[in-house]
Length: 123
Image (cartoon, rainbow, N blue to C red; front, side, top):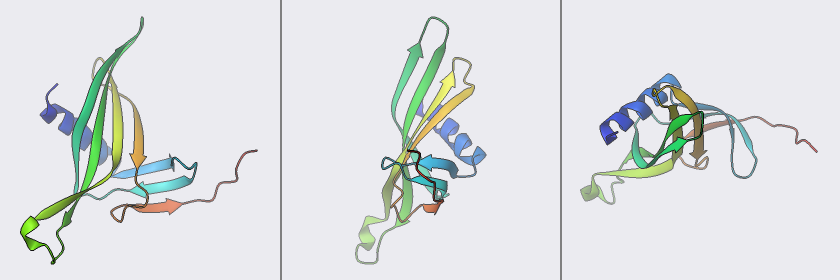
């Protein structure tokens, strides 16, 4: 699979989810009801793999997600600056039907909008 096909897959996925991630748990076990990603998002494949078991085959694509930001007026010669806001892993079956996703979002990024919802911890 070339990067053009992979870019089309991640773009389609982002559009289908309306650039939103629902029900996100971060690495500190904090729950976020919804995270809105910027529409000026770019994605780049950073790894791909094929998994095989005796009954299933799948393709896993890992993307880095970057938000485009105009350079500050202090450094106008640098053009646009990209800021990493996270990663997403998309998993497809052998027929390229979507199976699963795994997000890692920098919730402190100024490029994302988070809606948190207090969840009672389970003891």
